[in-house]
Each structure stands twice: as C-alpha cells, then as structure tokens.
Amino acid sequence: MTPLEMGLVGGDFRVGYRLQKTWDTTIAVAFFCGEVGAGLFFISLFTGLKSGFLLGLALVAIGKAGGHVVHLGRPSASWRALRKVRHSWISRGLASIMVFCIFGAVVTLDAFVPGQMPGALVAAASVIAGAAALVITVYQGLAMSHSSSIGLWSNGLMPVTSFAYALLGGMSVQLALGWGVLSPQMIDMLHVFALGLVLLGFVVVVSLIHAAKYGPEGGRKSVELLLSGENKMMFLALVLVVGFLATAALLTLGVGSRLLLFIAAMTELSGYFTFRVLMFKAGAYDPVFTLARPGRR
Amino acid sequence: MATWGMVFDLRRCIGCNACAVACKQENTLPNGVFFTKTLTITTGEYPNVTKTYVPTLCNHCEEPPCERVCPTGATYARPDGIVMVEANDCIGCGTCVIACPYDTRTILEGHHLKDGLFGQGQLTAYEKQGIGRFTKGTTIKCTFCHDRVDGGLDPACVVTCPTEARIFGDLDDPNSAPSRLIRQHKGRQPLPEKNTRPRVYYVG
Image 1 (cartoon, chains in turn blue, purple):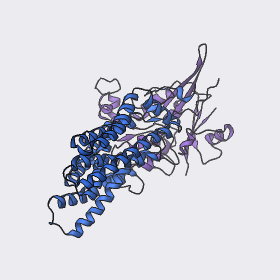
Image 2: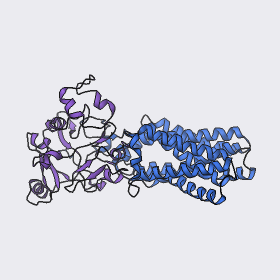
Image 3: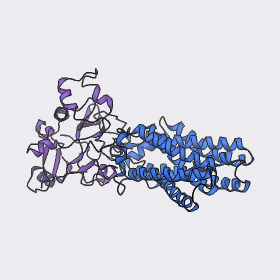
Image 4: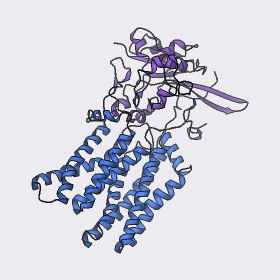
C-alpha cells in the first residue's frame, strides 16, 4: 500500500492521514476579517476613503479579534500571547492588531473629524497603522507556513496568498464603497489594480496547489481532498470560478455600474472565504508511514 | 544530566495497547484523550495479510516545533529534554497542536472534563481525584511521566508493556539500553524529514 492509497483515519488506532481539527471556521472568519479589513484600510490610506477606514478598522477590531477570542481556550489569558514576539507569528500578529487598532482609530477619527489633532501625529499614526496593516495581511500566512506538519500549508506561497487575497479583498470592497465618492480617475486606477490582483491571486492559488501536489504526503492528500473529494465543487466552483473568473468578468464589465462592482466584491469575498475554510478543512498531517514498513515477524 | 528518550522495538510490539491503558490510568486522562497510541497498518490481501504495530507518543523533539510557535512560552523543554506544557500560561490557541507533525497534543474542551470515562456525564471517584488538576481550554500531552522519571522510575507505559517493546533511558549514556539498541539496530526516527530531531526511535 502506498501512502496515498491510505484513507483518512480520524481518531482510529490506524496509520493513515489525519486532518487537523484545531483551527476551524471561527479561525477562518478571523483570518478573513483580518485580511480584508487590513487590506481595505491599507488601500484607504492612499485613496482617503473614510468609509474604507471605518469598515477596515471594524473588521479587524471586531471580526478578527472576536473570531480569535471565540476560538481561544482561555480568552481571559490572551494577553500572555504578547510574550514571545521574537519567536511566534501569533505573538507578532497580536501585537500588530493592537498597534493597528490604536493608530488606526486615530487615523479614522481624523478622517471623520479633521483638524482636531496635530498633523504630525496623524501622519505618524498613518505610517504606523499602515505598517501594522501590512503585517496583518501577511502574518497569518506566515503562521500557517511556519511549521512543516501540514504539507498544504508548509509553503512559502502561503503568506503570498494571504497578501494577494488581502489586497484583492480590500480593493474590491474599496471599489464598491468608493463609487461616486472617489474621483473617476481614481476609480479607473483601482480597476486596473483590482484586475491585476485577480490575476495574481489566481496564479498564486494555483501555484500553491501545484506545489502541495508535488510536496509532502500530507500535502498531496490535501490536494486530493480539494480536487476530487467532497470539497471539489466548492474549490473549483466557488474559489476558482466565482472568486476569480466571475470577479474578473464583473470588474471588466462593471466600469460604469456600481451594482456590478458591488456584485464583483461579493463574488470575490465569497471565493476568498471559501478558500480560507477549505484550507483548514483539507489540512492533513503526513502519516507516520516511514516506520511502518510491512514485514513478517 | 540525563537526556531522556525511548526506543520502540517493532519486532516485539503485539498491538495490545496495554501501554495506552496504563497511560490513561497514570495520568487520569479524560474520555477520548490519549497520550500514547499503538497504531496498526494492515498490508496484503486475504489470505496473506500482515499487521504491523506502530506505537506513538510525544517524541520530545530536540527541535520541538510546538515550543517554537507557542506565543506564550507555555510549552518548554526541561534540561533533560522532556517537553512540558505549563497550563497556567497556555491560552488554548492550538498553534502547538497544529505545529506538531505527530498529532500528539490535545486541547482539553469542556466535555472532556464533564463526560466521564463512561460518557454518562458522571465522573467516577477515580476521575474526580485526577481530573481536577487539568485546566479547561489548555493543551495537554505526554510528559514521559515526568513525576515517575524524577523519582527514578520508568514511565507507566514502559513498565506495563508485556513484551518490553518500549525501552526508556538516557540517550546521552552510550551504554544505556536505548542507546545500545539505536546503535546496534540503526534506530530510525519518525518523519525525519520534518527536522524535529525526535528523541523517540524505532528499531526492527
């Protein structure tokens, strides 16, 4: 029996593939909100879109932080996660969320009530909040790829995927919110960037799957679960077709229509959320197979 | 200072899982939680079928990925190599469970501490005296029975194994039983490609 012929064994006392169950939908929601919120806020720093600041900050402060609090076994002790900033991406992520919320609130407040705070303070807060937002867009991918246990995640493309999805999600929401608020030239420019990010995201996701397929045993099993198992339709239809192809088509056709841009944002976010959920659902450990050489005793 | 490790002799293991039961007794593990398991792999087709048994537990790695990713420092390695979890510091984020390639860690959920071994929502007297030391929402794992080891005894799974398939000792001592077995039988580590440098070896 080759490793790939082995089935999923769950909690059975058999050698085979085990799926990770620890990070589930609550973490997927947290990652989704964090990346879209941070991406939206980051782009709003360049466009000055007030609703982008507010929604981005809310997604991170409420959606992401809330998702993590619900997931934690001991949320009351979560402050302890700031202890190992030098070693752990979870620690770095928590620190950047806190910095982002504090300085992002300053920037948002200034956007809605301008002139109440010194210009230098707002400028410094913008730089710090932007840097923290950038960390939030990539650290989740870095946390997932940091250890080699799950082949699908243990890949340098995972943080790139996070970054591309964060910017794409932020850009698509920015287009929907900014219609009629931002200048037509700005909308045109965001359009071009959004289409480029759709292309980048598609290539990165396909490359991630390709790398996992020819990587460790667990990664191959994960790809099998994504492309031929019960998740096949969700991955192909929602992540690839709706998330990328439909979004690209709607963005191309929707230059003059707010409704189409809104639908494009919805299709992009649907594809992205499905991707996040499936990455957790299909994460498989390698079987302890190298020791189980068959032999007669 | 000794560096503790274990050797599994696959030629001797008969898959009885007495080790798993002894571990559950020693550590008062809740229903559904195991620190050690003897896994089975079945090869061939009837009538030529072979079963191989693969005992597993925390490998107390030299480069423990669980320790590296822990955001609070709750997971740490003692000077003698035993990887521990400080429950007071653990926040239950699950990052260590994800990072362990051997899937040997468990997060204690509420039902673990309530269901009881018979799954009827009632704890036996035996469970009541042992389960109280656990903290809901934290990670637990094999500690090589560190209390026993500190007192000069072998882990419970080792003394229980009826075929002496589990051999425990000081890996730094070239004359210890595990060191000799590893040297003579070219002991293999589980999933060496993960670069965790386990202190658990397999021979046979």
